[in-house]
Length: 329
Image (cartoon, rainbow, N blue to C red; front, side):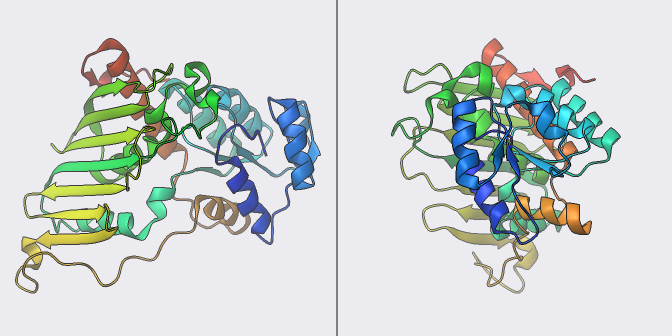
């Protein structure tokens, strides 16, 4: 386990410990006090030096939950040491950094998974299927909202508002889920504009919206917040032949489609959704041990970072940003 910095680190460790073929052997943390305490909880050894940990023969793979600005150095070192890599999102703060990680992973031939849990969920898998099968015709607009009250209710750690460690606030953290869902469903983006503010007057944004235009002509609205109480996840898709609603206060899936009008008139609720995919952690472990598919690899990680980098340029420079402007290796 490489750092307990991220709020999801404990959950990943618990899930790994629950798997029959996994043993947590060592912990490294940039905060030695926190790392030593965690290692004791896990019954593992704390290793203060990262290179020493990566050289250990009883470490086959690493789970990265370190500050985002440390991701490139940690993951490139892990790849060069031949360790399989799981990482919390986002992969890196800039696209060039993400591409450096991707190159190291490919050169080393190690397994890689980034945590995109919303892409494992039945309702979102259904949305992808509906779009791919053209049940909504051509998509004109997609809206995804993912928000909580971590800042307004003060339950997020204070370092989540550190612009250097995090690279941003609500959008780069919680907003990652709407971002990768839009990229997955709509394809390649063309341009983006951002409106961020800090409702709680912290150093990073806690309330944020991005508007993205895609190559296929669709527009996506990505909404996120650390200052929204009781804000259910919602995904909406609008097309030339119908609409789809996922989530909301009733947590339902509702569809209307001209393509289905001869069989079903008006709004329908599907009686069966796709089976969920294994969790990202399970995909990663199964990919390492059994060669099964990992659905969220380095290319997905680079694509998410590209979206985030452009979003923050738009916010800082107060302008619309073309994705052709983003620097690559």
